[in-house]
Length: 400
Figure 1 (cartoon, rainbow, N blue to C red):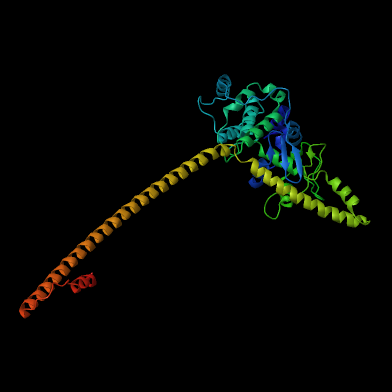
Figure 2: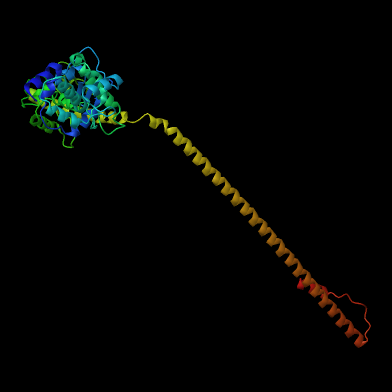
């Protein structure tokens, strides 16, 4: 890029982007920051530390982009697409690849409209509204038709709106659309970095090279790999503390009033630091809990009712099966009782038959005995009065 071309970009209001050095930010930090963005309040909420304003003023301070009166048109527009395709000699119906436009920029040695228009296409598609797409998005064409009015557009608000929309759809997609570089520099520039010297340059992106970025990220990394170890500094009201226990100054006052005996300033300061760490830790735990709960979709509550109704149907079916089994058991028991009664009746009939046979045998024996006695009397010619045969009766009784 020649000096004339750099001046062309700067005059359009995008000179701050030329201050960005080479290198890539850790993706882990970007993902962590996106999860902590509150789109409704336009704030970056750091658990236990505070809130950082993510608004158009913050974008202007960090990137130095134009913050004009008119809105950036990022949409499909037939006339704009036809104009750009004809002006840049693009194939109709096809979006040019980003690599094709970058090659075109390198080949163009002039500081003309074609260079500025192509440069803005790449800046929007890869940085301001970055995505995983490999082609230029035709949505950016409407804002690039009249290059003289580019500076009058509110590109700062455009960056914020894109991030807010991306955060709202983050649970549906793995990729994040938006200027994550701005979000990272905004966060790093809001940290208390101790004795590390951060240059006082404007826009703020010019003060952060990759060496400084990596150093501060390392300082802000907790032992478990998460971020948020460093405290936030107050930047003209852009940062607000969000502790469950109020402002940390209140903790110092609380210790002074609750101490049972006078303490030295050194001891009070040490005690205050311990209490603050405890408050921060507890606030982080509660903040993490709230963040996790807030990500639960409302649809899960609507799905509970069908589960309960299914459970009730399952229980009802189970109860019906149990009732059917009970009926089968009762029928089996009744059948067994009937068989037992039938068997008992058969046994009684057999017993009656045996008793009847025994009676017949006894009667035969009695008749034979009576006959034998009668024969003996006839043989001796003794005439005796008829006797009652008692023994035969007793024998019958004995036999019975």
